[in-house]
Image (cartoon, rainbow, N blue to C red; front, side, top):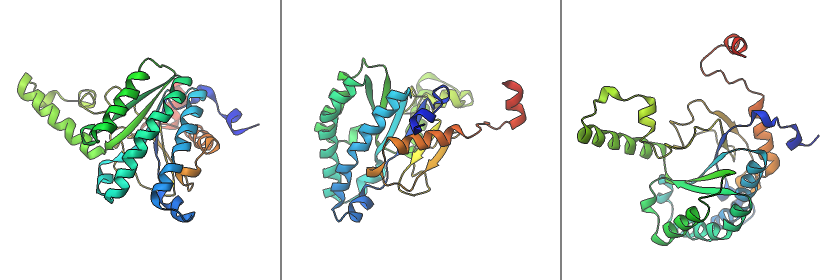
Length: 249
């Protein structure tokens, strides 16, 4: 039985979030400059997106560019922005073929104008697709998102005379950049790093975390299947005991 055939399609994570790490180390390992590693990181984006859509996963979020990434050398940042535009244009036919909707969240105002235009065009072109949504976290970090949400809530309190005591998790979540996106059940990080790196800190409170030594350019369908199979072996208790879960099933 293949890895794909071993997956229980009735117990899929509805939303998978991925920290795509290791492009630079992959490039160094193969004697290339860092930007070549980023170029080779495009193929696994396509593979993972298609594989998740085929399985029936409804949401995939890719950590494409963090707010901290703006501090990288300007040459690398410019190359990443150019690659983003080229990739978006090149992948529209694939998104259309697989009925995948594109979405993006983050401080998108910081993106170059041409990049924002290409991104918005792709989002509009794919807006009626319904099989799966591919979310790009761009110019994003959790601390930025949570501070931005706090500012929006404070303004709402002032303008609408809402009491701060009225806030609860549901209300606060409505001010987040991900307000219309379900929380991830599975978060994957490649390249052997064991940290979250300011990614979806609010949303992954109860996510299962999966870390792999594989560098992102080498991440393929089988790597994805292994992550999902590992997820399906886990007992998701949400603060309850195993006995309580047994009683409710």
